[in-house]
Image (cartoon, rainbow, N blue to C red):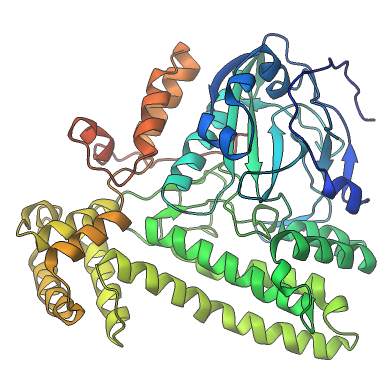
Length: 499
């Protein structure tokens, strides 16, 4: 049964335009948030509020807090939990859905883009499957921090508009302070959303979902001869570019289930994710990924696997001849790996200062990665310090290696390749510094910030780190501590699904 709550009138107007609710009956259930007993606004994203066309001063008020805590429903909102299915670690679940999230509605932002606004951690929904629908403070702040860091790094991502504490505990292994995240997304439509309709044999609803997703995300293909095939092509390109950007930055999502991969190509759900420190392709951080399915090096293969699951849902609408539909979709699936490799190579070329093409570039890059893996060096700092070599300062990058002999040989090849670029060393170094961050969400610093907030009620370390990560390419002397790798430890870093 859907739990109803008393709500107050609220003067803040989001100008919601709820196309999902009006277009896709069967893919959601209307329900309400559970009230928060003593909410407190912990952080509000002023810049994002303005981007959404909202007044941040109005949101940073008691009226805003009532909305972000789920205690009031803003004018025009139609709160609903979205339905989806999904393959979780390879096993299919025909019904998942928003077990702890509510879509408040959609706004059209200042750039004329439609954006979802969603509460995450606001209580039980019909899809909660026995869970409490709540979120703990640590995971909420973690998603806020990493999502905004990803945005600053230029990687497509959902965004964080606000974080509030609820004044009540949630119960996991131990009691933890509860919190709610207000999340913003191009949409929350996932590969698993299509699987939900297909698993029920509801071809007409899958077609309606595809029509909606095309008009919302890829309107340029609406008049194509075969728009559903072109839709699949567009999604494969968006997701291939996304995963390539993860690989270029050393990001490990940790739980690339089909219900965590968006049709829009945005990163979503920052549960067991983390950034790699020492370069090691087999790196796994997630405590539940015991077999390394979603290890760093496996992400491109999982990209293809997930998209093949999307293709299966589109077979009935791509062509009335099933065999012909499979043939067309398979042709696109066969292109995903080379498409990903193209995106990946372009990013890696930028990381080492190359703007022209050479057939040997891929080998040059993979040889560097091999030297890095053998030397067990920090992924982020190698690329950041590489630019200094062009300015005559090679010690910072060489000193990352215990024995830099192999790296020195690679440097000679790289510098010879750079001579083909026809630009000054200073220009190449500047371009590299605009692409290679000095600051990423270092896992040990993230944990420090979250511990201070959760255990001491001190938000200052979180706010400080958020400010640093908002400018990841600016080398600020007094912020050097945020660029340093963690102390060496024999205890592996582990992350958990928490929000």
